[in-house]
Length: 462
Image (cartoon, rainbow, N blue to C red; front, side, top):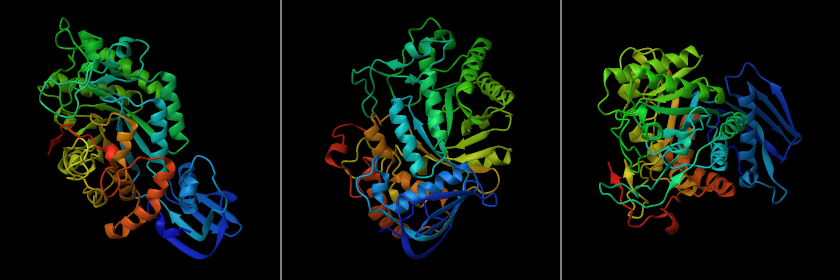
């Protein structure tokens, strides 16, 4: 029977006493406003459980901890045997950071609604509370906007895709696409909210916008050009034309987005804009002001700091920590998501069979050893990133995310110090069996299974 030491993320305090309680157990829920936000206290006796919670999120996390304590079979979709037991004792817990996020890019490779809902369940199982949903990019537009149907009928699919990462013309010749209806997105938002997760949507501008330009060429620099949804990876030089008509177009798009997503924070992109002019910066600031006027806080990637004076925003510091410090000095809140530490689409080892090895080397130990290098009230939290150029299926997302996202979850929730030598046996002996029960096709610690490799597909290392 697993004990309290197997918990992942680690709780703030644990007192174990002799005895056990049958699972499922009767649970009495009580309000505990004195606990920190999202905090909970479990008192487990042979007769049942008292769960005291600061708020609904705290209650949810307390129930997740009970599931962890009951053992891997408690994570299965249906009970397969009786006899699960909870160790008796007291657990008091709350997270160290308020924003414990993961970005899922559904623009480069579309994930179906069912796959997104499954991913929400996996975030919830790790007590993560933000899903940053990257909905638009050069390679696809994934949100229905009734006023502009061509965004999905044209922008929602591309003719083929680059295989791996190279500089040549080779493509797979396979059309790819998909999008979410308004009802689909409302369902995702509601499903996530039931699991204490906020969905933060992102529509990227003024770069990463070729799918929108393909749908409505008047949004781009040359309306007469034969624009196509991009089939390459990388950074496109095709930017939105920062005219008043384009601004009006995107005000309408964002108003529709706000009607779907109640998140206090809304992403507007702003990254990787080659050849940006002052007018492009003014475009970003105008949309940011529009979101603020609608009662929301804009989230922009750290390049927006170079566009001029900004209203108070959340800055996703992805290039390096200096941008997070700069954003805080300018009065912005910060989410740290450094590419060289927390991009989970980057390769996990230098193993010769590592599938599509791109980016920096981020081992499981590297992720577990990450420590935010910004402190104070401006730090909202941290976020792992799953960009999907090379993640063309839910199985590939599983492989890239896990078990590194397990390590990230403990970093985001639990105070240090941390010891990888102590973490690894907890992961191997107790948490990987939970992922097995959930049906997660994670990367084995020893290296990929043969069917998880992609022989002959080129990568690009950094």
